[in-house]
Length: 145
Ligand SMILES: [Zn+2]
Image 1 (cartoon, rainbow, N blue to C red):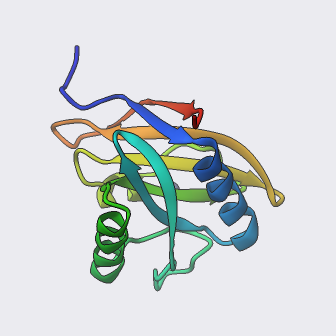
Image 2: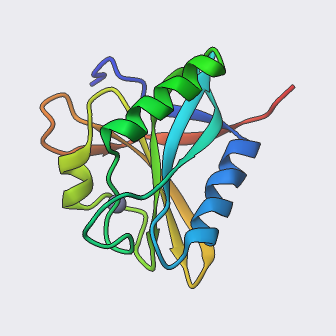
């Protein structure tokens, strides 16, 4: 059944490459950033500092300042904040309980698995309307014309 939330996230190859490169660069720590969409396509992976106090290798957190920076970036590009990405160093690209607790509705959450500094699976998730769980969405690469 459709929830009204688009289950597909379209992303440019360039933005996808930026997410991979960011995950490799911060390995073995997690990286995180914002997904900025223009006309329904994520065109920009906007890097955010991983500010969590409990160890960047373990979990990511988007603080209010990050959120504002992401919104500013979106308006700079005349786009919209579509969601967030982060990496799972040496872990599968599946959301953790912590990820679920941190998630907001109507955003796309992209997770990249980075194993031994090599980018692996990239998955995309949406929070269910009742916020009880994530549902896996589809990440499709949008070819720029
Ligand atoms: Zn996570």
